[in-house]
Image (cartoon, rainbow, N blue to C red; front, top):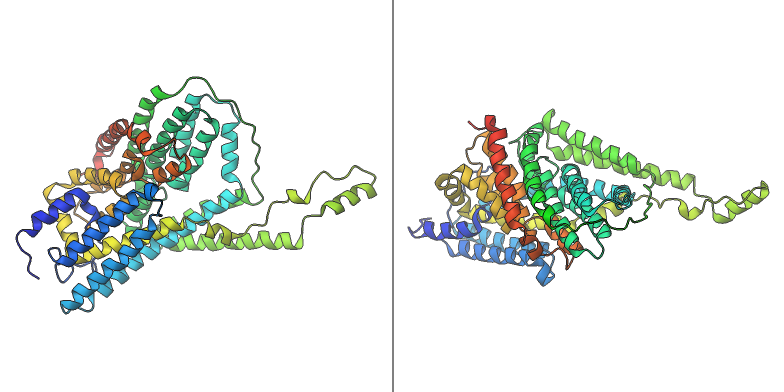
Amino acid sequence: MAKPEAAPWLTASVISAAALVLPSGIATAATGAAPTADFTSHWVGFASIAIFVLALAMVIGEEAIHMRKSKPVMVVAGIIWALVAGAFVHAGDVHTAGDAVRHNLLEFTELFLFLLAAMTYINSMDERGVFDALRAWLVSRGFSFRAIFWITGAIAFVLSPIADNLTTALLMATVVMAVGVGQSRFVAVGCVNIVVAANAGGAFSPFGDITTLMVWQKGIIAFEEFFVLLIPSLVNWLVPAAIMTVALPAGRPDPLDETPRVLDGGWVMVGLFIVTIGLAVSAHNFLHLPPVIGMMTGLGVLKLYGYYLERRDHFFPAPSEDDLGQSGMMEGTAPDTRRAADRPPAFNVFKALQRAEWDTLMFFYGIVLCVGGLGTLGYLALGSQFMYGDLGPTTANILVGLLSALVDNIPVMFAVLSVLPEMDHGQWLLVTLTAGVGGSLLSIGSAAGVAVMGQARGVYTFFSHLKWTWAIALGYAAAIWTHFIVNAGAFQ
């Protein structure tokens, strides 16, 4: 289909505002080839962009309109693909749209199952009290506000590569809120610090963020190569953290007396999760299978262990309170102080599955399908030329991080991975870093920030985070500069 000369500058203007979000590809035909027709100047293309931008606006305003972010993108995904299919059918092509959407669904399914397995493990450990034990240890030690600020940030940085940045941010934010009662200034600054640290920690691990997971599953960066981003990621957190310490109140909070216990099987599940990560890495590195095979196998092992716990409780039930009292009196001793209620509740892995972040997973589905449809319409090639041809890879990759703060980093990274621009290894590491940490610039730029806003509602807000955006931007720039120095050998 011919395209008028005016179309490139018009679409480039749209892309410069919403940029790589528009041309995502996972988005071409199943072979990854360019679509057989170009609809970037067609009314179908313009309509698809308009409703996608509307959906993104509703996602950004999730807190204001009280609508879960998955709802608009799932509806818009269906509308976009109806428009895409209709356009291709009208052009006499009845295969491209179907092949492209199946390719999208395959990509989504791999990541969906991987994330579902990881979320189930995290929820299982949470149900067994593993994270409560960590939180209780922190709040009962009587640390100063400054010490809590640094400890929670450090734990967020270290834990997020394993437990993902969203779970880590929620856990550490709970600690800050527990010890900062009546100190809203401390809670606000502490939450900013946690969001930045969790996102930075997730940037140097395939398990720390969805974007790093996508890069790893695509086979662009090997598992062990992510760890060269450790120092740049650390700089990204330390620079704003050091600046924000000037706003911390003096003194220390009153220590809290909490003594939760890890329920039966909790530490075993931690070990099984580590083994599961090993299975995923081995499947990818040694067997050249998708990592999701290892994750789902590990999830099956967790289910078997849950079955063991269930049957053990069935065959060896906790004694009743009456039995315990009678046993003590028959033996001439004081009644046993144990109570049947002290027996931990039976573990049910399917309850852990139910507690998965289904809104996030369905949002992921909607985003993949939305940007996939836009890529099939032809915005993939156009965006590739604008970002990586005209601007160059370094500028484009830095902008990817900035765009992640405005939109979600998932569609932005999908766009880059679908375009697969010709870049050296250092540039691929750079875009992995910027997509991971760029969302920290705004509270709405990452899942961790949005979740903590909901948890610390009214204290940690968009504007309380925006107050420190300049400091976070300094850390962002310092991280990029550090990457060019520390990983100079990766650049050709």
